[in-house]
Image (cartoon, rainbow, N blue to C red):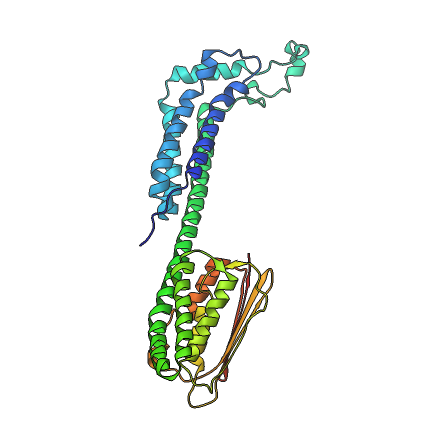
Length: 372
């Protein structure tokens, strides 16, 4: 059953804080950076609010309508066209429908802030002849509609970038959760795949052994019991120890030997010293099962070689088998090497090595994974 992915509250809180800081800066910046000749009055403090009110309206439309309905729906051209059209419409409306006396008072307030010419130039006609017109002096405040235009593009650009960044972070988090769930599903598939056919064949072999060798049958039952305990308890966790995984492999191989002829050359080399390290359970079962499935032939000499090397930081598994005859029923069984590759990528990303050699005489895998 698919798990519900919870939204990370940290993303939401961070987004709210950044938006709040942005609007506080926009509200108080005209007051903090006002002309030093202007005294702080209610008129000065409230003057930018009508412009910011329109910018806030554009901000709301962009955040709750344009971005989710157009940009996040992959309608990029429509989104940018809508933003430009909306800003242009609001700016034109602000310029032509704002009361004329308001524009006039703003113009006069702006002109009153201009620095007067130096005293020695005020009464010198000759020196004033080369001065540019007063209205073109640098530093003159921009018209209100230009301020509105600039603030609108900056605010919407900031908000769109912020929403896109957090949406990307959210999708990456969801992808990570889905990949983790996929790993768990693959493990569950592997558990169910190992259990039925293997246990059924093993029980049949043990039934035959009872009449041949009672001690061998008892030993096989103990190995089977140990494997069942491993499958029931150890694989329910994300990790198991290397020691328990190697014990499972050894029991698996010993029970599989009951199914094949003694003419099949089976060699298993396990390390004498195994460090106390962890790894995901049932990581090697598909490779070993694949070797027994495809490497046994009753018409020609066949072999299966399993070599496991472990140190403090790395584990290396090498499995080689002859190319034997495979029945059609066996061909479609098992989880498949493609799913094993997917699981390795999900678990280790690029921190593993898997080399596969497939020739007419031999099939071999070399797997190297880091240990933690």
